[in-house]
Length: 262
Image 1: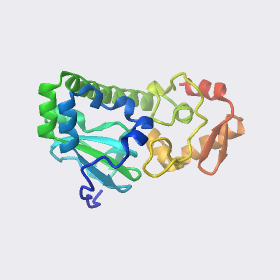
Image 2 (image 1 turned 180 degrees about the vertical axis):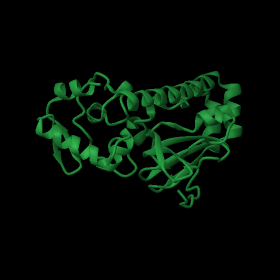
Image 3 (image 1 turned 135 degrees about the vertical axis):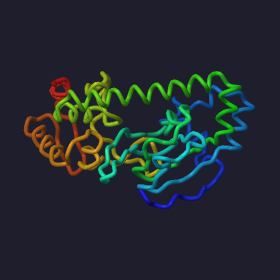
C-alpha cells in the first residue's frame, strides 16, 4: 500500500462518449443525467480523471476526504488493516461505484484504504464542486445519500453472509453472480451468466479476466485452499466445469440449491 500515487493524466474523459458511454456498465448509475446543463458543463471542466495501475491506492485510511471518487473503469477493493498487518477486505468495487462517500458525508477521515485490483480510471470530484451540487442540485444530494445507504446495506449483507453462510453456499452464490457477494449469500434470480466472463480489454467494464482462486477467497472471506477444495468438490458433483481460471456452470439449479444452504 506504499505505492506512489499517479499524476493526473488528463482533464477530459479518456473515452469517446458516443462510442463508449452508450455501452458503459456505469451508464445506468451515472448521475450526470440528473444535473442541469450548466452543472454538467461545470462538472466536465473541474473533474479530474486519473489513471491508476493495478495495486495502487486511491486513498488510504486516515486521509481527509477532499471530494468524492468515482470508479469509472476497472476494479478496486476496500481493505482495513490492524497493527499486526492483517488485512480484511470490506468491499469490492466496480464500474460506476462511489468510493469513500460515507466518510465524506460524515466529515471524518477515511476508515479504510481503497486500492485498485487492475488498471483503472477514477474520476475525482473536488469538495467545492460536490458541495455546490449538493446545494443547487436536489437530485444529486438524494443520489449521494442513496449511495451512502447502499454502502451500509452492502456491508450489513456481507457481515450476515460471513456469519451464517457456509463456504459452499458463499462460493456457489459467487459463481452464479461474480459481480459481488450476493445478498445474504443467495444470488438474485436472473438469466444465467455462464460463470466468469473473459476480458474485453484492460480498461473495459464490459468484461474482465476470470478471477484467481486467491482473489475469490479474498472476496468471500475464505482461504485459497478452501476455495480450491470446494471447487473440486463442485466439479465432482457435476455442478461446474473447471478450466484454468475459468468456471463454467453445468447445473444451475443444483448450484442454486447449494447457495441457499446454511
